[in-house]
Image (cartoon, rainbow, N blue to C red):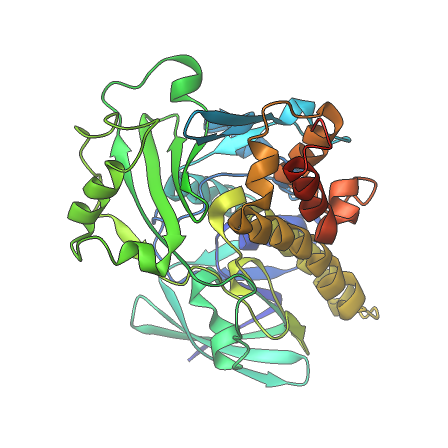
Length: 412
């Protein structure tokens, strides 16, 4: 069996793993990547947040993404019946990027992987991780490439960015109940044959059918678009077990987008994902850290998935570099507590979206400028900025403002 040695092994070549690899390469740290799929491959999580731009820049990936010509994302629109809540990232509270991209992930992830390989990092594709053995903080990972070549990789540290593969979470029995429960999704892509010009063909839009149910429209620069529905499990029981038949019937439930996609062909059979949220008991241990969806996934309503993936990938890489260089690292404070401080903000927003409280703020007819700017900063991914009252006081401020709206005591 072939033996390889590396300082840091990265499992997974999605955005989290590629940000980690890019940072480590810039810092002169030896790393290897193993990826179970062959790229390009489909993945969900197609809407980025401006906060991620900082992570792509620090990891040396930003220019390659810019050159790919993806659809720029300047904000997002929420529609419920006749009400519209639109957020422009250039009008957010605080500093930071005011735009990002919406991307077909097959193309986007391939751009990242190609750039990492161009920089000299080896990626083993079609590589299945069969087992990871830890001896203290050091590890030996057995992989099978192309279903035939066996390799053992000895590493000083592992960053598990395996996403829904959840390699270490499954092997070490770290999975636990998610923070957000009860939701499923169904989605597909279409080739838009008659896309409207301007905003209607460029802006990410969420159409809200009811408090628990919503639809997404993500237009891409290649002329395709991503369509999807999210709701609680019971809502899906009213539709056919045939996903194509069910999706076409769901489209009939729309109001704003009613009829627009009726004649478009699905580029693939709609995919249904039950129980979309994920969580683990801990996100680090002796010799490893979990990043991205391999650690936690909340809900797609605010497109936080890639934002947390890139943030956790970068933070894990920074700490892993220090550790393999012989420094003492406080993983609890600098990784768990840091990541959870941001995740808890988005958790509050997701929970209050489904209670309806946040929707009251989004669809208020006369929004107060400073409040909307502060919420917009959260939607842009700046959930670690505690100068923002809607970050610092996230556990109660949405409820409080919603209550005041109900009492008509505030000109929101």
